[in-house]
Amino acid sequence: MSVHIQAPYKLLFSRDNAHRALLQDYIQNEYRREFNATIPHFLPYLLGMYRADGKLVGACGLNRADLGPLYLEHYLAAPIEEVIAVHTGKTISRSHLVEIGNFACAEAGNARIMFAAICQLLCDNQLEYVVFTGTRKLRNIFHRLHLNPVELARAQPEKIGEEVKNWGKYYQHQPYVMMGELNQGRQVLSKTSLLLSLFGPMPGIFPVQTSVQL
Image (cartoon, rainbow, N blue to C red; front, side):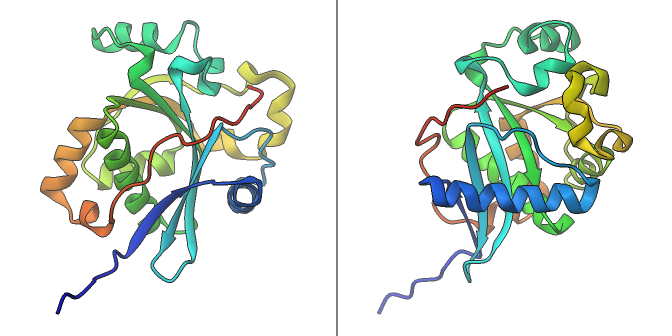
């Protein structure tokens, strides 16, 4: 007799407008709680992390760099691939870059689990690099995971103009634009933690394109 053991967590992309609204509400509530912020935009692809009992415990947005400008490029003086080249000496195609944004987890433990899951998901789909805007808290989470993303630029509030009024205390948390190498991250995680074993099969990536104003 075979025994099916359910994975403790799973990732799900928003599958319809109702599901997307659920993930947006979760993200909005967490940003309001932590930063007194009202999110003015969401990335095109929203992803939720669910426990085996069905409870939503984390969410974020993803955006492919080859499909257009990234939100975090507001903070940069040049396109993201050029900034990466200056800092690392690497020539990277935008088709290999993914932006993570709208990241929200109520508990730091869940944030570590979700970062590990995203790393696995993107590696499984032949993506190589991730870029994101990380607060001091997120940088500490990466440190606890033994990951060392590259700091590219400080995220300065004046770069986003009038939109800054929506962000509450966010910029008091010292956000930086950062870049990480996904395969390297997966290798580190596989050696230093059991987080990658907490998930079953990953979902198909970027199932539906949703328009977004950046």
